[in-house]
Length: 269
Image (cartoon, rainbow, N blue to C red; front, side, top):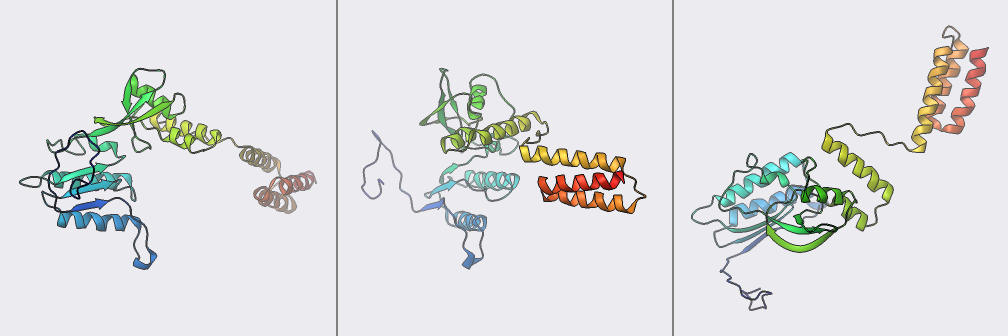
């Protein structure tokens, strides 16, 4: 904005000259080019690596989300480390990501050229501000204190207030479920999502969803198993009736009930 003589929304600003602005912000799949969105992302990143100079401004938004999380973290961390190591001075780079793993020293070595910032969030009912992102991507365990309250807010227990304020630090809690509720996702789905998130944090298996159709199917299966245990497998008619009942169990409750009655009569015979 300053380069074209436009208004800069700040009380004062020191703006250095730049020779080009390179971005990886939005990519769309193009069938005509036989390119996925991730391939388009990579093409933009390759152009950055070849064209960026110490006077370039590089903007990267959510790079790596089109592939496995581990691959995305590896690619983004290596790219940031590459830019940070450029001599004599690195490009000016701004990267937005939900890969919280990048803050771990074993994932990306600390560098004086790299600084982490987060968007601040206020938890209603508490006096503390915490950092947080809008979605998942982190597998950290539940924490106590302000960040623990933020994790509870993500499950809908407390209301986070997004302050739209950038501050040093890196966010641990995620408010993906809260954002989903704001967008109108039904409460039943949110409760199920919260249960899945809680189980994943504990490292526990996810409990099966107890929907009425599933319960009915389970009951039909148990009834069929009882018929099978009581059947005379040396009787071809009884075996045929049980096979028909098993096929009907997949077709629906009405057909299953009818076949179970018929198979019961065949077994009794």
